[in-house]
Length: 104
Image: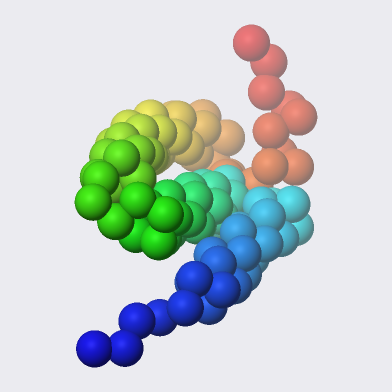
């Protein structure tokens, strides 16, 4: 069985990370910004699993960190979607540029 080299996995993870960064900094829609944050978190998960496999193949530390990040990302997405829904109900828009009109 051929194993995928660590360099290839890190290249994919780096590409996902920078696609997420680009999406976060260039988009105005809050939902696409949230999806970009999820891409960044998934690239970190790929790094944890890859380094766990190649550095400590007998331990599961990297996998546990990845599962923890997935749980945090799910909670973050649920809270963010609730905030986005409330923002849309009050302002009929989910663009970041319209958020400067918010008054707390």
